[in-house]
Image: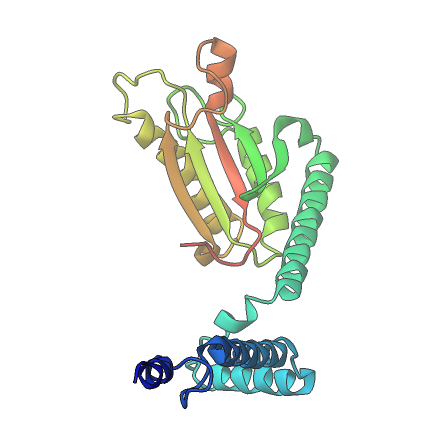
Amino acid sequence: MNGTSLRRSKGSHGGEGGHGEPSGERWLLTYADMITLLLVLFIVLFAISTVNQAKYQEFKQSISKAVLSHVPHGTTNLVTTTLPEASQTNSSTQASQLAKIQQQLESALSSQGLLGDVKISMQSAGLVVGLVTDSTFFGTDSADLTQIGKQIVDTASSVVKKFPNAIQVAGYTDNEPITGGPYASNWALSAARATTVVVRMTKTDGVDPSRVALIGYGKYHPLVSNSSPSGQAENRRVNIVVSPTASFTS
């Protein structure tokens, strides 16, 4: 009786000789599943990392065609301006043309003995022809060009009007306040001097008015310190700026 009970007890606990699956081998199933999943993962990663170049080029061309087909008429520059080679070529052409204008300006002014009366420099805004207004170009608190001032403006205009580049004429003053006279402020005086140059260039010298703009900066953009009379004299100026492009940037 006791022996039978003992045998039944061993069988009921699923030990050796029982009908259930041995619990010690169950971890093999989990391990096998994990190895299978890792193998699948590695296969997927390998497939992703291996790019078919022919398929990639075909995909890229398809995307380019799709983008171009949706660009509205008149806006193709949105695509072409992203090309670095085209941009570099355009910049090189602009720089070459400004250099050509500078060479012709210096030659024309030098032939008349006027080159020493102006300051010509290449800056980020373009080719700058600086007219220092102290007595050489304008009288004190005056917007009337002197005779030498007219000669220089006429000579510069004869060169720049042959090119399509946009031109800005900017007037500047020192920081001395204006008391009396026809101009209420340095702003008004600087704008009046720039206007005189523009009118001379367009009315007398034949420069296309649509290419020219003028601005009066007054005392607010000094070239050097106004702490000395020589500095103030240098700040009283009118700049003729030849832009690299045929139109003004907005």
